[in-house]
Image 1 (cartoon, rainbow, N blue to C red):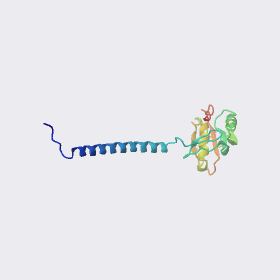
Image 2 (cartoon, rainbow, N blue to C red):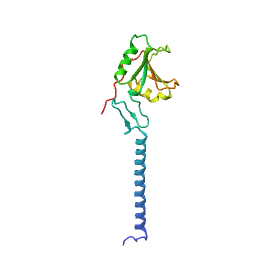
Image 3 (cartoon, rainbow, N blue to C red):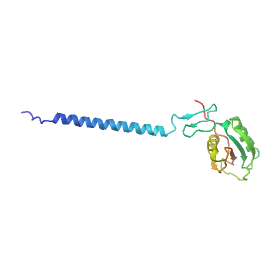
Image 4 (cartoon, one colour):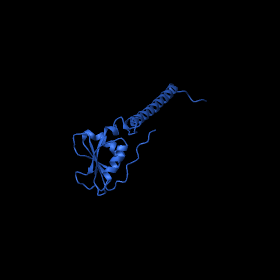
Length: 164
């Protein structure tokens, strides 16, 4: 004897399969949206470049060196350090303002300090590409001029970003 066929069993199986397929499709779409949202929140694919390869992202652009005026100050006892750093920054396209000993007369034990105001935030980021270990200090100035005080642990500027 064969098992009796219960009315509706094949229809019930089709409903379960359809529900499972829908759940799998929704899970896949949720994962895809999650990945896409994370990709959009990161800096992938939104780089903005210049002829000097100073880059940033569309959400946080970096000022171009030719738009950035930098005062270079020596905050160490090593003679000529500010002039050397100013020459290297000028070679990278930065506009150099004053070159002198630190007017604040601070002796900086680290690599340096990048001093800026709210108008110079992007310019400070451009300088920090050359000195990534320098401390950024918002000193509330009202212009976009950057002061770079070179400290005792300064060795050399970081390599400029490479063009690809």
